[in-house]
Image 1: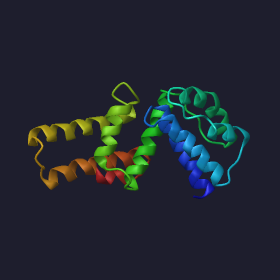
Image 2 (image 1 turned 180 degrees about the horizontal axis):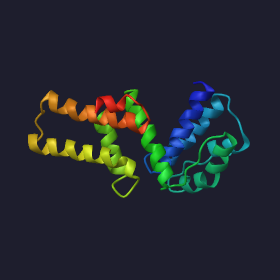
Image 3 (image 1 turned 120 degrees about the vertical axis):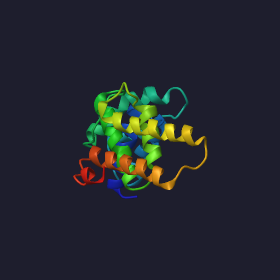
Length: 173
């Protein structure tokens, strides 16, 4: 793994942790990956050495994460912050567009981790999750037509592009 890829992995893990989407151990593992890739700062070493003892790892992570990210010129988002939610939406939208997750994965994630109480940027994705749920109910677990599924998937992809500022999103949805 390159240093740049490891830093991206740390940034994404920290963002997703800030919204409760990944455990603290993912951030600790990403910090270790940065060290292995050749990125080294004093606080990154401490972060990578945080004990993943269940129940205390998040407290230790909170203590060191901001400083470690600052040393690496990476963004820090306070847990539960609107900015963190928006950054997490963009992380997940990128994952959809590079096909590491499905459209339904993105909508389900937004519905579960952001909710209607979170950033308004997630509302269209949550509405599309509700559309998937409606289709599941109407078809009672049977596979619905490919056209219906593709239509919703296309709308989710367009929304992901919009979240990332992709001008081609308007042409899709």
